[in-house]
Image 1 (tube, rainbow, N blue to C red):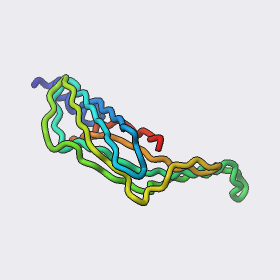
Image 2 (cartoon, rainbow, N blue to C red):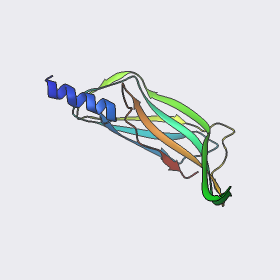
Image 3 (cartoon, one colour):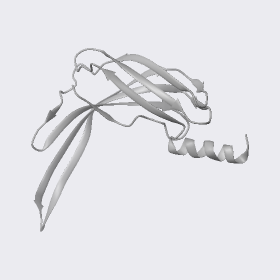
Length: 148
């Protein structure tokens, strides 16, 4: 591996660009387990992972516009995770360059997960993310809101 290849590999590690990750959920349910499929498309360098995982969260967001605070008007925005749960779907391995990998697993929300809702000032969403645990920045799918 030449210097430029090492540099490209380091940049991929820092930016999470070692792979593109996609996740789909089949018939997601708040009350029963459901199947998720994760696909990773590896870039042009091998990628060592300690695990592939799926993360589920509940996210409550509050936004109140035009709140009078002392002598000014402000928009108030707050959010918090109501739960966070990880599922390991693959163990430590080395992924070959320019290859696609797929994993499938059953996941479930905690029994006390709040339902999704959208109110005037508050929302609660259930979200999923798939990722590859690597040195540096984990390549991941980004958060996807589940229609549950």
